Each structure stands twice: as structure tokens, then as C-alpha cells.
Length: 366
Image (cartoon, rainbow, N blue to C red; front, side, top):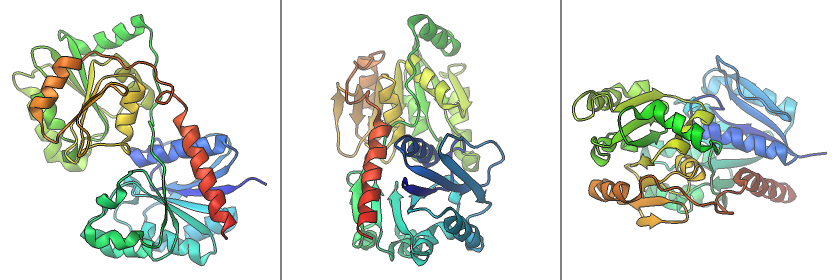
């Protein structure tokens, strides 16, 4: 009998959430590796992505504690060997229930695994305590995750068996031929010479407004492609104002959300992707992985790395180093990454294999 794993995530593709996309890719890869996968997620108006061997339970309207009977019922009836909870997701909102899931699993005598994608500050101390009091295996996607926790919250790692499993691209690799690439470029370029892309969620900490300082209005057409947070209306208005005035009038395209395949094609046609994150990027960031996979030159920021990495075709700058990023764009725009057997391998198969080994280890200690 194959292993049964219930993934719990507040968001799942095509809901607009990076961790929801990650959860979907993980579910598909685990299923392909022979694991029976269930996904417990939020109610969604549209059609959730389905695949053979994956049972999706789209039943949680709001992740408030009053909905705990739904979680208990699904765990009881579907009877997984492992309950694997993803933190955080857009879909959880401010609900209390997600923080109680490890305790619920423990009380139901189910082995729990958690994945922490982001750090926590002091305002999350109580909720972090709720999901940390149960000793569980913990997957992290950031190699220096301890530094992402406020120093007063690092106690939350003390009773955890930690497994570092790097993330990967959640978008496919597009491979347009030269004619297709030129048609894609003409769709966006208009009268400009270089196609500059930002993609992902448009939040203040993503530094999207810096594109207007880094890019050259005499050469560049900027495309901002991704989910725009309507709650951050002031920030969206700020971006729109930059795009509407000289020297950027008619040189900026804001597309809002695009399907993964269209994003991949846009990256394959671009001269550069600029991701000037205000907190720094790194190996956990699926946007960087997606751009690298599609071969385009990438400019991003880092707290630790500096300069141009030829293998990945990525330039790492200090946070807010406008001049450095501007100089890198001038030097490397249009450069395409060469094929690399490590970068271009099936990363999700590897990630699923690492997870399966972890699950087997957890069950062997039961």
C-alpha cells in the first residue's frame, strides 16, 4: 500500500499565492512519485487544478477555529499517514485555525510535518507558540532560516527535526523559436528596444517602483506582470503614477495576473528581469528560480551575494543599489543563460524525492 499524505494549504493553484503554486507543484510531483496525495484547502469560486492521484478537499470558507470539525472529518475519513502543513499562505488570512493544525493532528495521532516558507516577528509570538509546542519535523526552504526569525522567537526551532529542501520554479520553461520570440517581443515592445520585466506580487517590499530608476526610458519598455494586491491601493496608485508621466508615458505595460505559461513565454522573450526586493532575494524565491529556468538575465538584490553569477545569469546587488543595478542592466541586458545540467534538470522530482525520504523517516520513528 502506498503512502498517503494530506497537504494542508490555505491556497492552491490557480488561487493567487506563491505558496499555493508551490503546494500544487509539490502535490503533482509527489503523486508522480507514487504517493497518494490529498490537498485540504480553501473554498474557491473557480476550478482548482486537478491531477491524477490527487484528491482535493476545497472545503474551508474561512480559516477560523470554528471550522475545525471539517479538518477533523477529512483527516479521520481520508486517513493519511502524514499531515503536511504549509505556512503561510494568502488563503489562511488572519484565521486562528492554521496555527492549531499541528495540535489537531497530534491529538488525532497523526504524524505532522510543517513547511515554514517565511520568517516571523514578535507580533506572531503567541500563534507561533501554538504551532510549535508539538515536536514535528520541519521543512525549511531558506538555508539560513534561523536569521528569518526574530531573536526572541528562535526557541520555536528547539524541538524540531529540521530538513532544508530548496525550492524551485513554479512556472514552466518556455522554449519559443526565434520567430515566436520576435512575435512576443513585438507584442510588448512598441517603439522601444529592450523588454524589461517584473513579475510576481506587487507589494511595497518587492521594490517595484525602483524599476523606473533602474531602467532607461530612452531604450526600455517595462512590463509589470503579476498579481496586484488591491488592498495595497496606495502602492498601486504610486506605480500607476510613475507609469503615466514623462519620461515613462506609454513605455509601461501593467498586465496584472498572467497564467504560468504566459509568464514563461514573456520571460523567454525579455532582455532582463528586474526583481529589486527590499528584503533581499535568495534560494527560497520561486520568482528567481522561474526567471533563471527561462534563461533570461536577472537583476535582484541579496543580503549576502554580490556581482554577476555567470552560471545562473543573475546579478546580485545590495538592496537599493540603483547605480549598481543600472550598470548591470547596461552590461548584461539581452544575455541568455547557457544550458546547465543542474539548473535544467527536473527539480520538482528531486524535491518530491527529498520529501518522500523525510516522510519515510518520520513514519519509521513512529
